Amino acid sequence: MNILFKKIAGTAHYFLRNTFIIMGICFLLLIIAEDLYTGFFSFWFDIRGLTIGVIASGILALFTSRFIDQS
Amino acid sequence: MKIILKIYTILLIIGVLVFFGWLIYKNLAITGKIFVVNDFCNKSQFIPNLYPEDRVGTLEKENGICFQRIFTEPVYFKVNASRTFSKAKIKIIYENEGKSIIQLGLMKRKITPLDWRYDLQSADNHISKDNIEEQNAEFSVGLDNITDHSLEFIISASGLNEGGQEIKIRRIEVELSRSPENWQAIFTDLKNYLFRKH
Image (cartoon, rainbow over all chains, first blue to last red; front, side):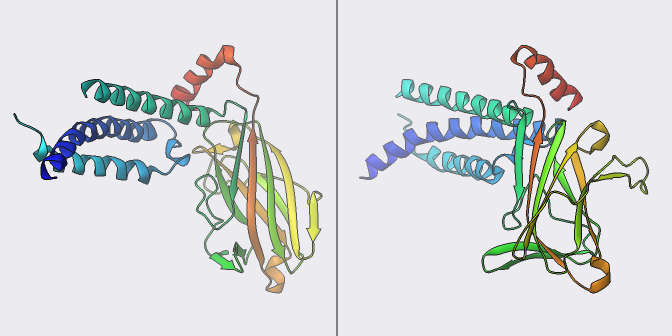
């Protein structure tokens, strides 16, 4: 069970890491675009969802990094 | 596993690109129309609440109906517009116990702080059902009406200041329209929107 959990967590790490990087870039672009242009982008959706998604994937990616198979 | 991870990453990138495309599509108002509402229950990004604060009440809710009271007239509300539009159709729904005559107007861009020019419409388009009234108005909009990406409207209520009455504004609906996007000129329009911001 422990080995299976480690394997799943280790694999999930790569998915979470990529999610964090791409969503993080998306978030930064959105913040820059808001300032550069009219600030209307976040009017169409709830930016809190994206913020929570970025933070959560970052924390989980960091947490699961310890389960990466080093062998 | 590596292939699945690659596919997942590509899907994420496509998702982000589609997301930005959708946001630009919404802001450009490709169809030529944007319909926005403030029902005073949920915070509206496009139509913030009425002001100035000393003439209106806070948001209230009674029997599931949300509203904002007006004590002294005139009051104003803004409509945030992502780009320029040529027409604005306004509909307000309100309770008017004192039967004040409600008129809607569109403010001109302020050149000085004391510049209060506006285009006030007559109270003709008025519908009354029991105690609930509805007022409609249509305005031509130009660059002369836009300040910091927003249009400013005035609600005038003749007779309100005299009798100690009040008006409960329940809902504001705004339809902004312009000619639909011409796909041949989409890049020119996109450039105008991104660089000139209109």
